[in-house]
Image (cartoon, rainbow, N blue to C red; front, side):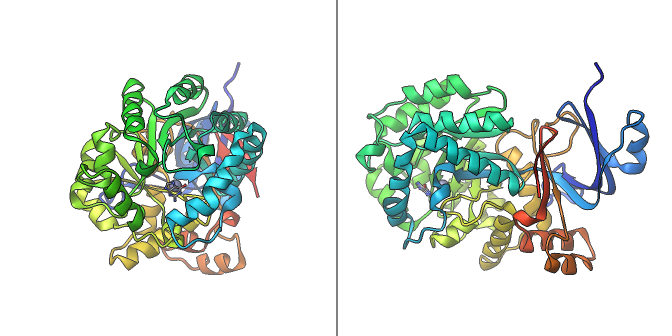
Length: 431
Ligand code: GUN
Ligand code: ZN
């Protein structure tokens, strides 16, 4: 049988390194061709060079005037919080009590989970996000519902069951130290199709020491799984952790002491880390999910990109829906840019597109699978329309450089900017 080949003609942009540290990091083909074979990248380059290699009779899909980039990767968000996005509260802890825990209770019902997961995944695809690291709830059925919805769309998704066994309502509490459900979910879902499992202790205050110890043991027993949690998001939370774990040097040190820092461990927020914490992040190959729309919404604080870069931390961007206020990584870039400005540092648009693609894939240890157009990688990509709105058309009509174009896309763009989304070579959203 002849292989299943498709080709797409457009401007192409992807990365082979971090543009903050390498001038040759970005690969741009103004008149480019992307060739996909059986769901994987076969080639990406200049149209003139690659068109002659196409099988006879194959007409490329014509996206000229548009920009194709790798699918966006969102490294931190909560699918059960979709319906409570934009719920006001004076900070993280009251927001959790008032909105989050009552909402997450609904996910003891598998059907509710499936309905929300279907909506959530379609919303991600509308925004050009093809991979995400997703928190479910404490209910194992919320994980089954999520992965079933993801499998139906054949998406590369990472998710896990929230672990919490104290400082939460009874209706959301694990039996103390209970890890058997997580282990069963790893066996059921990790590496089944495109699904990947993340061991998911919610955050230090909602786990007993016994649960954190067992969580570290589970992570060691299944070393190719992911880990995700929250750290140093909010000042009141940091104070609370200091009271709950008086022996720990810092909030991050709680996780470190239970063996939860390693490659494929994703730490949400990382706002109030000190230099020693940041050095541990880099030394252990752990990664930060920076969530600016959430941090501004809850008043949590401003992430320090400059200090993180000095420490050599792996960085990525998360929407953190439902505390985050948008599913769009373009809108997340917009806020990340302003957060960096408020800290006196600067993010180029090129860097932000890197962070949302190859940077995130590297942070997750998945750069051999997704995040760029290197041959053999899974063909997850988005087609961006620089003329999505009258204002964007007016502004990008006279952008003088790639940086100006990307900056306008990041600052003015949202779901409307995503003309089409492809996952594993298949069209999964078209505006
Ligand atoms: N810390 C613990 N749980 C949560 C959550 O659901 N959202 C955010 N933003 N922070 C948390
Ligand atoms: Zn979160």
